[in-house]
Amino acid sequence: MAISTLPERPRAVLVGVQLPGVSDEEHAADFAELRRLVHTLGYDTVATVSQKRERLATGTVLGTGKLKELAALTGGSGVIASGAQDRTSKAREKWEAAASTGSESEPEDEDVDEEADDAEPEEDALPPPSEEDDKAEPRPTVVVVDHELSPGQLRNLEKATGATVMDRAGVIVDIFHRHAKSHEARMQVEIARLNYLAPRLRESSGGRERQQGRGAGDSAVELDRRKIRDRLAELREGLAAIQKDQDHRRYARRDQLRVALVGYTNAGKSSLMRALTGSTVLVADQLFATLDTTVRAMQPETRPRILVSDTVGFIQKLPHDLVASFRSTLDEALEASLLLYVVDASDPTWAAQLEVTRAVLREIGADSVPSKLVFNKADRLEAPAKEALLAKHPDALMLSAHQPDDVVMLRKNIIAFFESSMVEADLVIPYARQGRISEVYEHTTVVSQAYDESGSRLRVRGLPGAIAKLTQSFQE
Ligand SMILES: Nc1nc2c(ncn2[C@@H]2O[C@H](COP(=O)(O)OP(=O)(O)OP(=O)(O)O)[C@@H](O)[C@H]2O)c(=O)[nH]1
Ligand SMILES: [Mg+2]
Figure (cartoon, protein in one colour):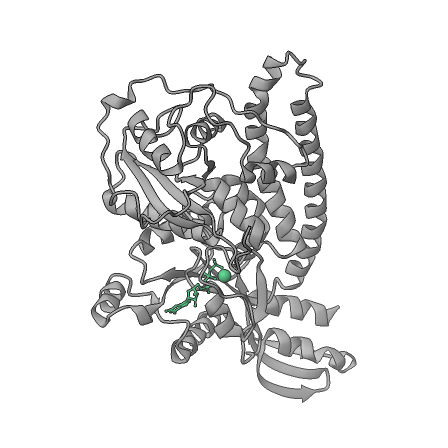
């Protein structure tokens, strides 16, 4: 076989059902986002298959006619009857290897949709599926469904298409797995992956267990499940230890001025982080480039310092386990004094994206933290579009992370926010404690300084909490 210089990118077909209440625009935006997710994973989308339905077909998501259309693209039989192509996909092998189960996961025919799907109208909401040029291109080997699939649906679709089938949650969990760098993020992702895998493992192997007449107690599946449970317990313990350490560090930072950048994935949070702090956090035109929270002081440094946190991005239909496992990075947002909701103003779906961000933060109780809306990527908008947005959101900031002047403006806004919550007070530092005077400079702005018999008397501006703490510490 010839050795090609470029690694071949797997070819994927996207599948989505347009449910009642979902507009054509929303449906198209869902597909566009799924395409980006799939691209981030390293696959090329070569076709899309879409259908309007009242609900997902219980067995196969699509109706029988559409399923045949899909199977024609992938080279599958289009039916779920036994004897259809039966293979364990690469993706599945990977999942199962991750859980160290070695399960052979035989597909089953349960949960097949018995209803007459042909009776339903089948309409294309998107242009006809194939974007392939008709040279002898290899067939797509991956089918990505924009909905959460039950284990049965996943098996059935794999049987009918002969391709590897993934759902949206699976794609997201896989991207997280690839992008996780720190020890902590890797542990969090593994927890999410095992939680994602466990129910699929159970159902997919249920048929096999029964067929082979094994007792449920000592079956391979039971063993696999136990292994997963043990591994999850181990991971949770390890994570708790790391998080304790982080809690300490957060506790030490509690009186500092902190602002967190939050928002939809790819909105430009890390770009703003770089611009504000001069740090070299990863910026990439990918979804979920950032999975670890980074905290850096704003540069040039202010007195007191202002710390900026870059956080993991959000996405619609984020698997719940992932939200839960990234909770500690979100705690960072919870403890900030100011949240900057960063949106990509050039994305037509920015409002829906902002709502997703707000909903997740609401869920963790961060909606009471003062916030500011930041329209980023303003360089991609024409003046009238910018004006219209600002007219509707007069308190928002309109800027581009790539424009140094805009970054200065953002910086001034951040400083002004903290200034407005500061109070002035007098601190007396006894002569015996002069060695610790730098603590005052670290946490407050010193307005004036005088000396008398009790020590140095400083007039300072700072957050009420920081001043109370300093006052107490110099009295002890
Ligand atoms: N034109 C333009 N592009 C921008 C701007 N800000 C960021 N980008 C680009 O948008 C892409 C995503 O930027 P990031 O800063 O990585 O976005 P993020 O919000 O950190 O994304 P995740 O970490 O994936 O959640 C990159 O290709 C950036 O270069 C901007 O103001 N204007
Ligand atoms: Mg980022």
